[in-house]
Image (tube, rainbow, N blue to C red):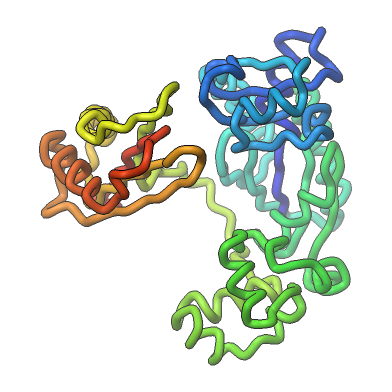
Length: 338
């Protein structure tokens, strides 16, 4: 099982379009204007050396690298290039499970996966001019994590055989699926490393995190993951829209109006897929940069924009109206049965 991840994908596409940017610190995000509010979508490796990371405010990135090249997100260009990458992978005669613009799992039958991984990297480069890294594993979890050790422009193998030798002494946040919040909760329990998580009591973890999540976390520590790759098209579970304000909002009636408009746009998105919404979520980012979300089930599955907007606006009662707002977002989860 192989995991393919394009290196610095958005930035690399921009360098292909503008070869003079090669080797320069390139930051892609928002409308490409670091004086506006927006976040980094991708930074080139040259920019990452200065500490610029995805999700960072553009203004912060500009302070770290004043002479960086800032470019707007061009989704059409990235979609086109992503399609070329996936077509190249499918041309290898393997099962391809697309994860997003820049990554995919491959189900491969080979006695020499390392050589096949080299073929994958060369094929993508020849077809697109883009470099990728490849993780080789005996399940998706290990393949995905292995890719990080192969970056950039390389490959790495992580299986049951070398799992603890490679991962055992690393922090739990090194595991795919464990974020900073969960890692802090594990730290509070005295579980600091992957090896400690793997040897934790399943019963105790179930009592702390729940009957499903607790055992699942222990399994992550042991490197347990799915070994099935599917070529079925990826189907979105939800649609979302959000907007960042160039100046903080203090009038929550104005906030409500923006939520209403976003809800109507999301309703159009799900209606276009002929799928109904079953749950609505509202995200609010307070100034300077603290984000909270809350959600509720809809009374019944619907594509009615008025019903979705009313539910979304009602969720604003759960937020602190004394605080200023820099971003709002609306997400609608769709009925998978349709």
